[in-house]
Image 1 (spheres, one colour):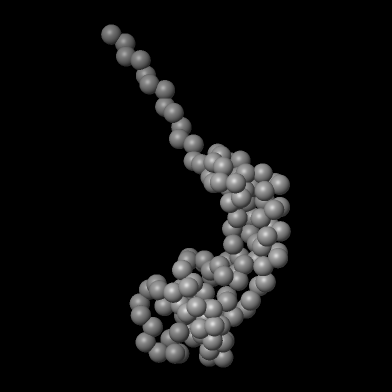
Image 2: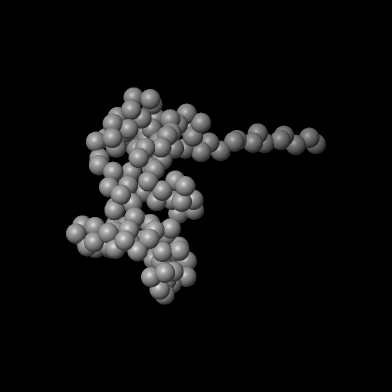
Length: 127
């Protein structure tokens, strides 16, 4: 007897709109980067200071972009995020020089990042 072949159903990956929380197929997403000093990339430091946003429409994308444009970009906040990334991933940092090498920041920038973070709730407030 002949057996019927089952049709393969292709799984559709869904995205979530950052504005309305609607779900929609991944290939319909409107995406782009916006400046955000609180955002660092876990894998690629070229994207530090940029946040990838996803929306279901160009209107929602524009609304998100406008929201981020109103938010001030604070260099010390970005530096603090870089320090936090190094302190919470990989091998422990043992010296200040090691922290400088792993963050790409100099001592003055690291001290300003620490001061900024102390003024804004400490290291735990970042997560």
